[in-house]
Image (cartoon, rainbow, N blue to C red; front, side, top):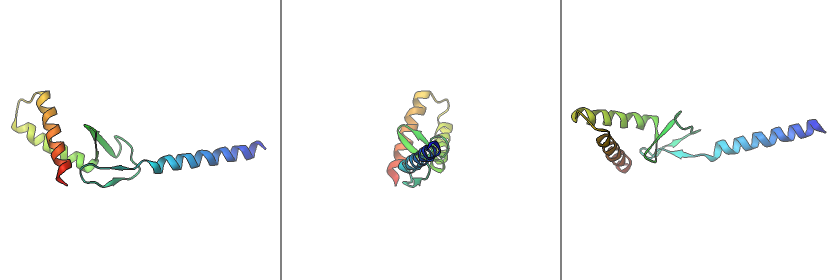
Length: 94
C-alpha cells in the first residue's frame, strides 16, 4: 500500500512540476519573441518592468554605452533617464 502511495505522490509531483514549467510564458518586450523555459537572470532579464531576452539586453547595453560615452561624466540620474528613454524606444520600435 505504501509503494502505491509513493508512486501516486511521485506522479502528482511530476505532473505539478510539468504544469508549472509550461505555465510560465514570457515574451521579450523588444523583439516580441517567446522565451522558452524562462528563468530570470538565466535566459531573460528585467529592466524597469520590461522583460528582455539576452540578445536584446546586449543591444540595450551597447546603446547605453554609446550614449554614456558621449556624455562624460554621467550622473546616475542621467543614466537612469537614458535607460528609460532607450528602453521605451526599443519597445515601441517594433
